[in-house]
Length: 346
Image (cartoon, one colour):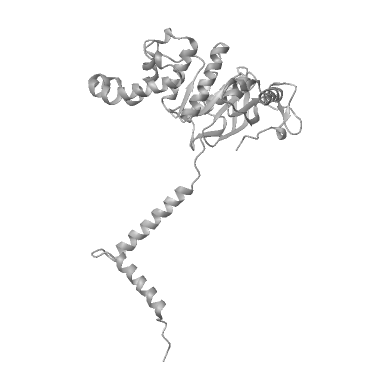
């Protein structure tokens, strides 16, 4: 008589499998439909797992950007020559370089008001080819409406984005209750961030230049852009006001977690406000020693951090200041590509 394989453990396994099969087959539902549902569920789990494993897109990625402009006399002038920048997570990035090296051009490429001749710019994994609200900007000149109060200027973008003018007129009580009041509360929050809450009811002409720039910063921040671009924002201000605004924007960055792309011609300011310093320069050479053409990213380094302006006098700060000035601003100092300090690049 053949030996039986149905030992105690085998019988237990069979019973468990049978119980699972019975539980799986709900009364009144065909087996093929149940199997199809199980397959769909398994497929959904696989997709979910794949999404969980997918890398998070970088906040900003400039990939081998080359940009040029046409010359009136014919031909082209190369402005930016093969520049790559990666900002994986929100950071405070300062950009400096000699006059005419392409700092503002780079900012316009990130904004989307211009597109690179070669290479690509991506924000959160999407190609940048036009301006949108995910990238706010603060210019050197204040973009304020003289007929609106400080608070009305700050919330103007929210109102423009959320409703249209005729809708506000026709549904004023409803609009005031559901839209304007929350906007006003949010506007006061951002005015408090830039230290202007007590001036909410004033008009721009009643404010100093530094205060107007604070309003412009709050106006840009309230739209909650993924990247806040700043193009020489404090260039027209006196030294004392400028230093106060430097502290304001650093505090705003820390409070709201923005990614800030800060272009300035002031090297000391760039090192003080930024966590990461990018130096564009036309003063470089190929690895074989031949002169370079256009501006390259010759330095990408981390900045020493401190909560007060006293840091500007620290030896570490002054050493970095002198080093950057020598490597990026001195026409006689032309680094070879292989010698570029890109230690802060991911």
